[in-house]
Length: 329
Image (tube, rainbow, N blue to C red; front, side, top):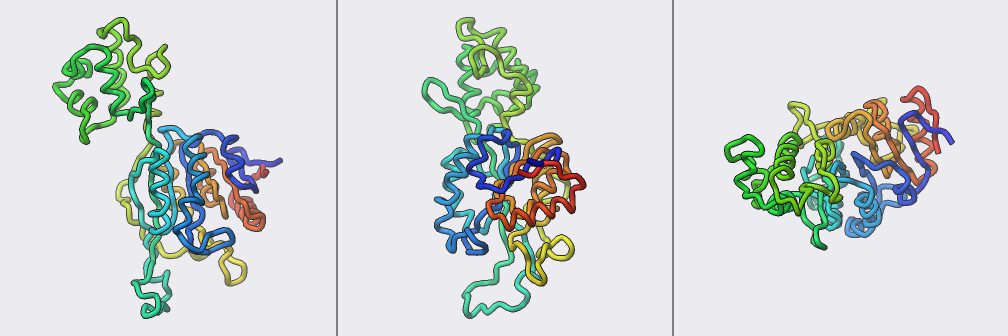
């Protein structure tokens, strides 16, 4: 058994491995597209929901509200899988378009035959794991739970403003039951949870607790939502020509893997939604672009590739880009 200090890669079906991996801060899904592009990729997108279903269940089981999922696919493939993600408590955040430009079609498309404009895009869709609380056999969203806990203390909602030291922002933003709700920053959460436990009814204490014994800490509260930071100037349309040059792996004149992603994109999504030392999953590793970016950004990675031939090529790629390969399983 060999592994790098940060990267763990497996020649196996990821379904057999998820429960043994550390919980992810980021999941990068770059699996089947439903276009018959490689062995194991269905020929149509309408079967993708069922194909991804067991993976999504495992992702949901092993993720936390701190987890971000980046789902790569065609527009139609994503549309088919989206309902299954929502059904498993994944919340849509944003859809990012990879615009490959005219180079992708090479000026040789018979639109009289295909009967539509040439496609030069694919999508990378951002989801986060919904935070929920079980209260008296009822599942509550984080927004509902905050309001419920404050009302349980017996204090009027107007006192949330006093607790946070603001005029009306707390009751209007953090405890509203409408669509204008805001996630309370950790400092605000600490203030109003301490206030409720100091001034609320004695028989209901502790308030804002998950286990009924201790109040949620600032650090635990920060883990109730996914991380995100955005480099200035980056938006949801990523204009980049088809992968070529030294980064594109080829066997003679033929590309080794049709679905190889630019390392810059993998680095972008990892860096935007995690910090140094966080755990990154790449369930459909392919040529392990996500793991190379993970290593470069000093995160901890877990990846799987079911095809032995592709796995072997991916390992050679890792060896060429990461100086010391200590552990490959």
